Length: 483
Ligand code: NAD
Image (cartoon, rainbow, N blue to C red):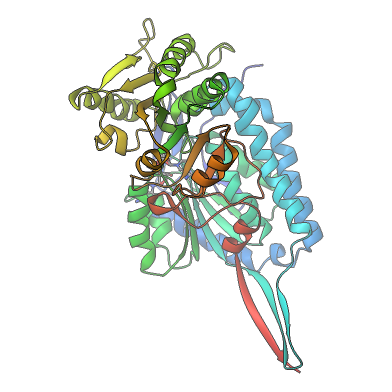
């Protein structure tokens, strides 16, 4: 079944609404470059309305709802997402250019599971208590933080938005969501889903718009917003930190990455290749966790490259609705220009392109790019240091464990890393020395929602997942009773 693109309105106080001044912007399908709909363009006025609704809702029926009922509502949001999976996956693919099989198997199902997971987690959530000899009893109570602004990127639109919204609601907060301007459709539908699931009006508000001088900035500056959870570029995070500092908002940051894969000579090469193809090119390389710096130990360097290049050439790039497509379209014209400028830079920096580097033949419309493998670059090159966020990887040989650890850590980023080795002791030894919030050994992208997720250095602040999400979205008050 085929679904049509929708025009996107804001969702404020339980109602869909146009902008106060009627302003809209175009929504473009990255696979065709054609306009498929309009999006209401929000700014300060819409953010003011949404924050006011969220503030009122903090003391409304949402506050009085029992934990049992709140769990049921949150679980129901997840169920409704799964019930509407085909429609949501279709719209996600229209918005992002990613293959439909990917939206259907990862983005949308995991969005539903996010609500189910945090609903279940809430059921057994407690707080600390301590008996201090015969002097006192201390116990903590948990309360919502208040109105939380959730600002999201375009690469995994519904998945990342729900990864924030589910624990935010589970902890009893109200929220104003600012979806990425390039991918507004599934967020828009989520408003109705929340209402259908029984979320009271004003608890979830969605305002579309851009970042600077627009809805995003207005949200981060608003005095009645108590916290901001932001996923996006490191540079944007720095701007938001300045804006949020004026009212000292609590911040959670999931930012960019330039993640290393460390492939030792004793690893199972076929397994390495299979997973490295995914960690390099899945979702067009537009995943913050993609391994874009590949370090291969010299004895297997040539064998790795032979196989990796051959398999990469076999990846079908093209129509996201074709089930055989492995790599869809990049998100838009501007990003396409940015990614291809790095390919040009790689040549200027002395690199060699082993495959890719250009538009696939016959795909003149949309923003398609062949998966690209670059070798011959020095570790200090900008292409090796800066996040490209596209289907572009560099491969660099190494000799010793010490050398590769040092190179892997030689970046401002610290989000994730993958280590490939069959030497158990080395796996533990190296994993503990990599400066990253997430380290995989002999795998990639394997997630358990209970585990801490996030980056160190300039890849983020704080962790999401399980208990860590509740820590961010709750205020704790410690109560001490003298005995
Ligand atoms: P971006 O920073 O350009 O935009 C993200 C969101 O911030 C958008 O909704 C945008 O409108 C908003 N925004 C932009 N400027 C703003 C401002 N001044 N004030 C308030 N809001 C503003 O990022 P993007 O291009 O959408 O996403 C790609 C980036 O996200 C990459 O760097 C990627 O690594 C990162 N990312 C990180 C994770 C993670 O978990 N660490 C996950 C996905 C994406």
